[in-house]
Structures are given as structure tokens and as C-alpha cells.
Amino acid sequence: MKEAIDFWFDFSSPYSYLLSEKIDDLAARFGRKVRWHPILLGIIFKATGSAPLTLQFPAKTAYSVLDFQRSARFMGIPYRHPDQFPLATQHAARAYYWLHGHDCALARRFAHAVFRALFVDNIDVSAPAAVLDIAAGLGIDRGEIEAGMQSPEIKARLKQEVDHALAIGVFGGPYVVIDGHPFFGADRLPQIEKWLETGGF
View 1 (cartoon, rainbow, N blue to C red):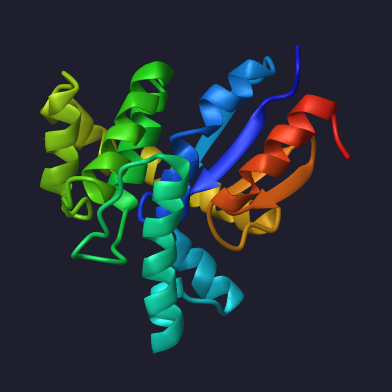
View 2: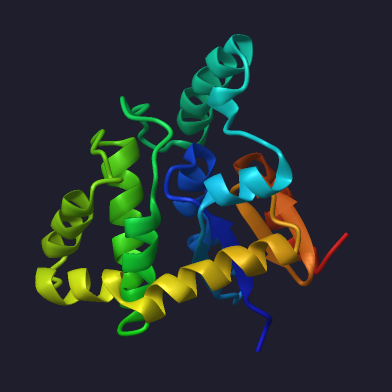
């Protein structure tokens, strides 16, 4: 069986959202599975001395928002830049890992729903209630997932994922690792496709 692809992302990352809409279908064309790893870029940025694109300087902020929207149009993906941005996503990430431990396919549907809630419907997914609403919309019991999100085991799991991301050199999102080779950014999708098609270059 071919090695799985690792996809590291934060739910508040526009480019991660764009790649999330394409990566599974692309991987499936070449007989690959994708392991999704939601992390917290705020911790990554603090550890690496970086910052979100929209919190650096005005010209970069303006360009970045323009490019998020243009990249989405180029990729044929709906996008509305959120009013609340950037924002914290630990509740969504914890919910994902709890779901993943019960139903991997449902966790993937939940991840897509969170991304689309933020970047299409302009919903503030930093709020625990919003995360629970998204889960409930997929038929997930609110009480069960709320308890799971608050469990020490799930909080530790998210911390472990962030620590592991730092250990392997993740500095932003999306960050994809294929056959030990990293690819950063949604604009690396053509390179990812070529790599999968040829077995490396």
C-alpha cells in the first residue's frame, strides 16, 4: 500500500481551506490516503517568531486578502473573507480529534463543514457554540462532543500534534508531507500532483 500523505493545517488558514477542498480527491487519483492534522498556528508562529499574513504590515495585509480571494476564484472554490480574522480554532481542532477517534469519515465531513462555515458563511468558529452547532448539523450529539472537546485526553492529543508539527519543521499552513518531502502552500498543488504522478522529481 502506498504511503499516506500528511496534511497539516489550521482551520483559520485560508490557504489551508483551499487545499482542503482538493487534496483528498487528488490523492485518491493516485491511490493515496490523506491524514489530516489540525494544529494551532498561533503556537507555531510564536515558536518560530512569525505572524499571520494579515498581522504583519499593511501592504502585506491588503495583498494577502486579495490573494486569498483570487486564489479561490482560480481554484473554483467559494470564498468570503471572514469578518473575524484571524481567530482561535482550538475548539474545532479538539472536536476533530475526538470525532476522528470514533468515526474518521465523519471527522473529515466535520472538518470540511468548519472550513466552509468560516470561509463561505462567515461564521465565527472560534466560539464553542458555533463548533457544537456545526457538529449537530451533521447529526453528532452535542453533549457527547462537548464532553469530548473538554476531555484531558483530547486536549493532550492536540498539544501532541502541535509539538510534533514543530518537531518536523512545520512553520505555517497548509503544510503537506509526501514521501518525506514537504510542500508548503495551496499554490504547491500542481507540484503535489506532479510528485504523485511521477513518484518524485
